[in-house]
Length: 357
Image (cartoon, rainbow, N blue to C red; front, side, top):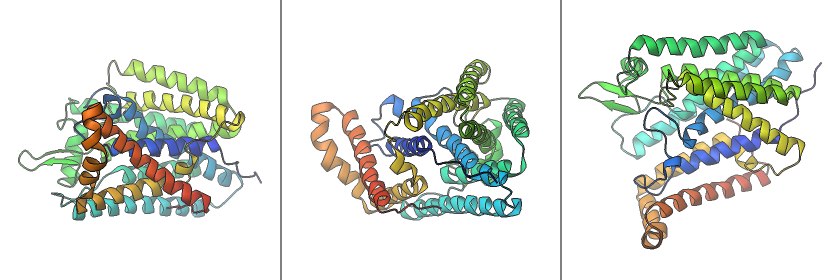
C-alpha cells in the first residue's frame, strides 16, 4: 500500500490567493472606476484578472491528483471513489445554483442564470476526478489533446469568434436561453462566459492540473517548469491564429494560462514547501469554496438592503475621491472587502473550522 501524499502548503496558499483575487476583482466600490489590470479583457486578449479563474481550475486538478491518486494507487474501490467525486461535484454545482437563486430573488434579476463559476468548478472537478480514477497518465494527455483540439475545431467550424455570433454562444443560447449571463429577448442572442461549450476546454485546464499534481507528488519540479515553459510558449504562438479569449476559453488560452499556472506552482512549491517561506493565502485556501460562496451571499444581501452603495459612498468615496480621484476609493473598498473575509477565514482556521462542500 502506498501512503497518502502529504499536504502541500504551497497548493493551499496558491488556492487561497486565487480566491482572494476573485473577491478583489469581483467587488470594487464603483464598477465605472476600476484599474485596467483588475478588469477582464473585453473580448480577445488577456489581463492579469483573466488568469485568476484558470489558475483556480488548474489547482482543482492539482488537488485532485494529491487527494485521489494515492487512494487509486493503494487499491480503493473505483466505485467508492467515483461516488465520492460525483457527490462532491454535485454539491458544488447545487451550491452555485443556490447562490444564483438568491441573486435572482434578492436582486430582482430579469431571469435566473443556470451556469456560473461554482457550476463550472463542480463539472471540472467531476471530470478530473473520474480521469484520475479511470484513465492512466498517458491517456490523460490524450484526453487533454482531444479537448483542446476538439474545441478549436468546433470554434473554427462556427466560422466566427465574434461576440454572440460564435458557435459557443449560439449553442448555449439554443440550449439554455434565457438562463444565461447575457440574453437579449429582442434579438434572441445570448452568451455565458461559464456556459456549457466553454466548459469543455476548461476541463482541459483541470486535466493539465491533474498532470501537474502528479509531478508535484513525485517531486519532479524540473518537469513542471519545462512543461510550463512549453505550454506558455505554445499558447502565445497559437494565439497568433486563435486569440486568447477567456469568454470562449480558447485552446490557446488554455495553454497560455496553464503554462503560467505550472510555473507559478513550481515557484510557490520551491519557496514555501522547500524553503519554508510563509504560506500566505493558506487561510483562504483551506476554506476556498466557503469564502467564495459566503462573500457572494453577503454582497447579495447588502445590495438588496441598500447598504452596499451607502457603505461605499460614506466610508470611502465621499472623502477619498476629492483627495485621490475616483479609482483609489473603488480599489480601497475592494481591498477592505478582501481584508474582512481574511479576518473571517482566519477566525475559522484558528478554531479548526474547515468547511468541505
